[in-house]
Figure (cartoon, protein in one colour):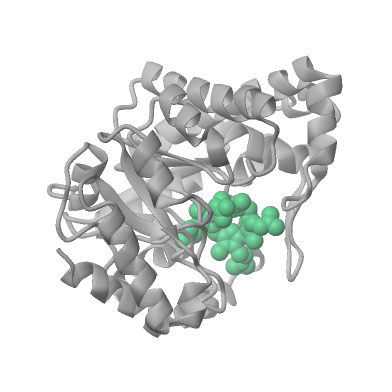
Length: 346
Ligand code: 1CP
């Protein structure tokens, strides 16, 4: 089985400056690729797809074959953890994920964490297959959703809301919310450990819905729980690099980086590179933050922005990525052009 031997991506997360700058893109597998849509049409539904190691492994590898990215991201979803913890999770066409709502943390305690993590064994099988097929210089990233982001789906029933129900919980029943976050921290730590045991070379924690939180809630719902999750991972003996992605963390980004013991930080589209360079320690790797919509627009605007980001992070460890995921409308030619610019720049 080809293990990872030399990886610019892992070197960068370890604090080195690498050339060419390593690149991968959030949501690089998925709906902008015709080969993905063809594969997806064969699955009964999205959950089935995620739990089919042969299909999920193929989807993980597709963007590596097409673009030669430096890292593959496991094809799965942040909501699988809620499914195995016993909630009803559905992915509806044109709507997105719909999740059975919880009232208390007990609703997430009907299944033991051990049992829930075991139920995710098809995901570990996918990791094993992908690692077995990847070249020795391509890294495999395992992932989970951050506790608050996953909890949000369980409280509100879906993502992308104004988070008002979950924020009211945070004020009216803070202990219940922390109890819920703690279940997710424990389950996610074991889930990530199992991904690493199966062959994942790095981990990413997606805090996709941090945007708009008051600063005190950013501390108690985002920074604290992310820090506890990474600490728990280390306690379980996981040593691979970890990337945190507090999307919409805004001016709390420096606090996040200071308090969460991560190796790399994902940057969303809104963060100014000058703010990053002024406020984040030099040794932390940064990953981001090209606007995914530039992959639709293309042209000089896209090319100039790619170079601007490369120049801004010339003197620090930098993994090129987007500020959020590749959209279904992204053009393959534009993704190829971005990869080409990265490869040629030094
Ligand atoms: O039928 C389909 O193809 C459904 C679309 C889709 C895909 C391709 C969903 C539903 N999830 C995924 C895969 C996925 N999700 C991956 C692996 C592929 C890759 O990245 O290349 C990953 C890492 C995720 C993670 C994920 N799921 C996040 C965090 C990253 C982010 O985009 O912010 C979130 C928030 C989700 C929830 C989710 N699942 C699917 C959708 C459309 C969404 C988000 C939108 C919503 O809540 O409305």
